[in-house]
Length: 498
Image (cartoon, rainbow, N blue to C red):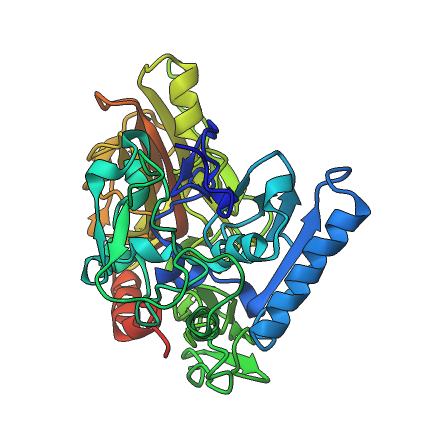
């Protein structure tokens, strides 16, 4: 079977690591989230881009820029592509001989490969659709209602390219479109050029697999995903926290709001939020809690780590260190894309780069620890409790890998007070330790330790573990915080628009 010259993005016959569906870069992030997650759309509908130096002639660069300009015009300026200046999230366009892109905004620099064979109007637009957050049409969860897939006619090594997406992973936004620029041709990855890998269940007038233009449904999808049809819609009116205030000048998409607390209170949650493309404010609803009963709150967005330091209490143990990170982790298919507090690449969190360490230590179990020392729990009315957000995502992770301990101040005598349930999800999950935290021995000062044990599984460990928004406070304040988040839970769940 020869490659279909009209679909160069198939990258047929090329061994490209981390590639799925022919031209989608799996390795940059979790490919299952795609457009079902509005955090993956481009902020303010703006896509910064830059070119790899010395990769294209001036004629080739100008051609790509012209296609980008055409796409903005065709979509009625719903999306704006701009040359990158200092933006942290941007598209890096390069020529390494193939055609592929990641799905949606992945955080930081993300690759858009446009080889010489890809420098065609329709092919560039096809890849830009991936960059904006769209999958191939034939992988929709409802595709069997519209096409018949002939699995026996598909080359075995490429059969995965015809897997359907889970319903929860995509927003359909429009009815099935045989004519979409995102549809495969009927002979894509066929064992024989005369045999079809699929056929439509009804008569179709257009050319299936065309790479000439965006269809009306393609355009509509972009406008719906990026809320261009309802551009006047606004996020809800912000709520000022008790003992604090909120300031804002607008509530339209991409606008920002700021929070602060009165003297004697500490802000728990984000100090700044933005109106997402699904017209929901980013992050949690912040709360002002009394400084008398809050021992420590850290979202890691300020310099330092809020007294969370490497654990050196036991000279006989060589604990690995946690790292502070913004944006995605360096190992593909693991860890979060953004922090929990801000939901952006600018926000920070703490994480364990356990995937790389696991490989370096030849599959030996390693312990990563960070410790918050000298917590005066005896002076806090009602005792000390704790809440935080965790992100445990990747392969090989097992229940109990993430643990929390308590110890007398500067002591190596620790007591386990919490361990995770093994939930494997790229979403941030709220964790509550509602039982009073105290050591076995008597004393007013305690340390709290967060530990990750890497390499316990029987399968290769490729899982980074992250935590964010750690709150240590009186048990009563933790309960108030939990009730507050539950009350405003609707602001935490993305809702489709359109």
